[in-house]
Length: 317
Image (cartoon, rainbow, N blue to C red):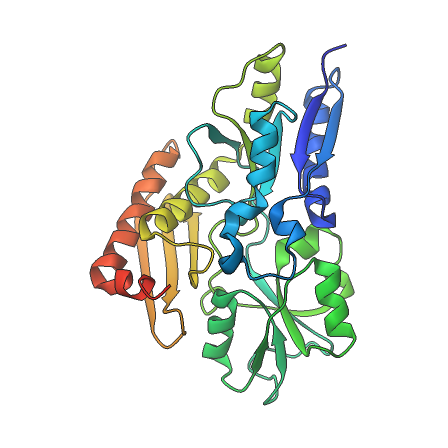
């Protein structure tokens, strides 16, 4: 019997649900290899009540998983793409980006109200500055309340009346099978641009993998890659990397591949939300969907924003 394939993930219910999808697909391709899910608590999980910007940013959600990869305690790690820093350390790589789910944000309330219909003084829970400022663009009368924690924690605060509304990613509720349980309104991404990488998963490995069975396992992992998702997220990540965005940056970016064109839309706010910058682009897609072409598109869009003064807005962080 071949050695088991060990998949590392955060221990949250959503992370386990996402990783189970990957395990099942790999299991179908590798019927003679046992596959284990290895939950690993990250610093981000342990500091659930702290502001990510103040305690270390996105890297807090992957540090322990990458250490487990480096120590060969796991073979691959499954992440929510938006938890990854825009640039990985050189010893790690994204081996596959499975098909992307719905990238929209959702407004969840007790009565199904829209964002613009929320009454003056309504308490909207989010700790994302991007979501906060985009929400306030549409309704200046709401009050923003800090909110971290898993999906159940957020929904309980809404149900108890502690909050009047929350904003969550549609993909998370779908993967947990909770979408039908809540009253929600999809936030139009023309007004509410999601985070880079939202709704996509990333399978991370060591940049150089060695050992028995690597070819079969590597082939199975590569087959999970969705060319469209990889192309779109490559553009988004290159944009964020070139912009120099951190987890504290109030920025949304969405790349959409359609009819052989890659369209990108982005919004950037100053730290206090007083200033904003919108940009968009539309470029012919590479016929082979080579991610390097998408990266070039994302880089050019970021450079255009930097030339317009985005660096001054970022300097406020």
